Length: 118
Image (tube, rainbow, N blue to C red):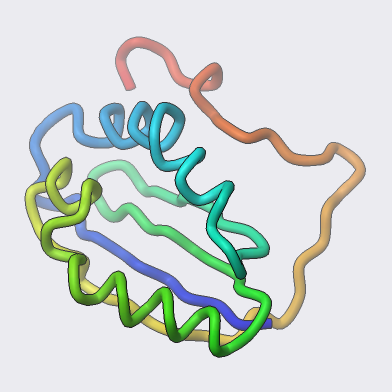
């Protein structure tokens, strides 16, 4: 499978950035990527105060390359970069060796798992 990871550093991001990113993913980004032709799955991952990452799996290397090329052109001005205050520190194509869905299934958003202090 054809993967791509895009990672931003949160080390120097303003306080509340991760909370803002969660809201952005839920309110805007989720819908945008739900309709992206050639995308199988996207996950948004984070480590508070360390990094924020988009992980993508595409149907073909062509679809992955096309998205990567278009994103690299606008990466520094993307919504994530604006919220974080800096451009991605890495944009890497990769191979996704496997994906499994466990019996508990997936949740589309984690907003209900975080308290007001997060």
